[in-house]
Image (cartoon, rainbow, N blue to C red; front, top):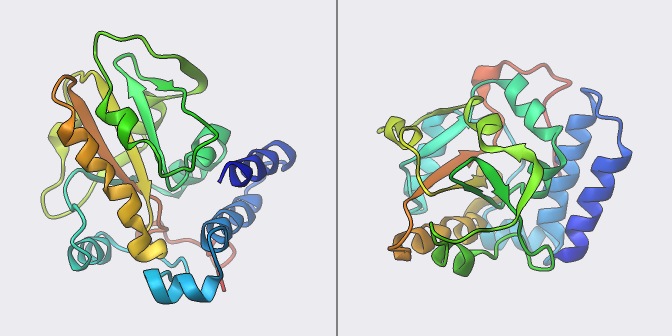
Length: 222
């Protein structure tokens, strides 16, 4: 997985981030997830991976409930502009289909880049409000919060209020199917941490029908 992120870093560094290149970048990221640990056909069969397609809040909640994943504290990008803007940030791309930990001041905590993107359970469980952690410049919590909105049967409006010790944002996508379990398992680490007040935000990264994307913006992955 370490080599995977090196590839992502090089892509972000070398590509001039024009609007049309977002589609290329996104498709590459999806392909990396699908083929890194095995062949694409196996992953489709084993984990229910599908082509990225436009979704709705209803289709996402149905997916979560059918797979017995958490369905509260769900967020999505407010519009396509906010979504593509996030893809411009190399740090966000590096954490794509992974998680980000922010401190009380909204600064992104550094992480061990030698480990796969799904590791982090023990780190989250061990977070302490009286401890100092190294941070990484280039992406702050507010840059994400102001561009996302809650969705679901019971929208998590309250999770945006207050000032917790830490905020954990997990990015997930319906298109990777049951493989999302590696991401949703992180909720257990939050529950086990009894010393810190941790706000958990599940941020969906699927394309949305409400964005009314043009045919050139839609992604085909086969």
